[in-house]
Image 1: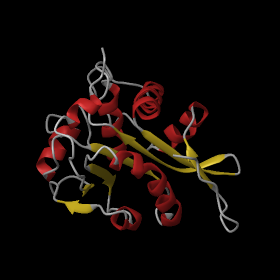
Image 2 (image 1 turned 30 degrees about the vertical axis):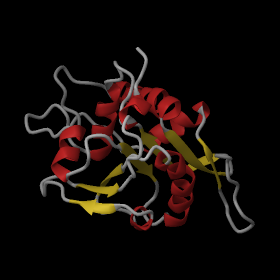
Image 3 (image 1 turned 135 degrees about the vertical axis):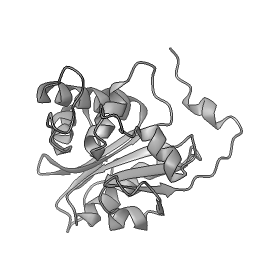
Image 4 (image 1 turned 180 degrees about the vertical axis):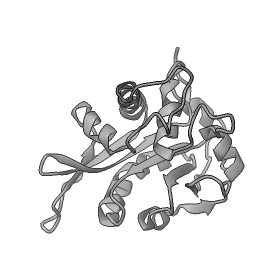
Length: 209
């Protein structure tokens, strides 16, 4: 898809993310703390930031759909869509998602992302959407979704969106329907149905090792 530019009344430009955008998008994630991330042996905020940047770079940029809203050279908002399968060895994806969603990895009752999807009733094979934006910034998020979702929809696969708190109106407007998640999690899940056209859809995401 061709990058889209802002109209005359827009203060931002929607474009594909680049490597130079990774630090800014990483900073948009919820600030980590050891209280939120009680892994055995402890872990520093520097390590967490590094893991998040690696996840955004090697999964988001290389295998997903990753778009940003650029305003005066500054990343204002972003959406990143992760594919149903990722290269073997990218364990940081799960950790970075848990950090963003506040699922407290390392706790005995920790819920992993795959388990949460199953509990919510999402199909096993689905894209995963992470929207990063300021609450109420729905016009920007609308444009980001308009840019990012068509390529994903061409695969015929459904898309699950996980967010902290109530889903953004722009998510609902894009056709995502609410899913039920455990009440003790401050996370909302919603699903955009896909049309599973080819029988070998899973092979579309096979990764050469």
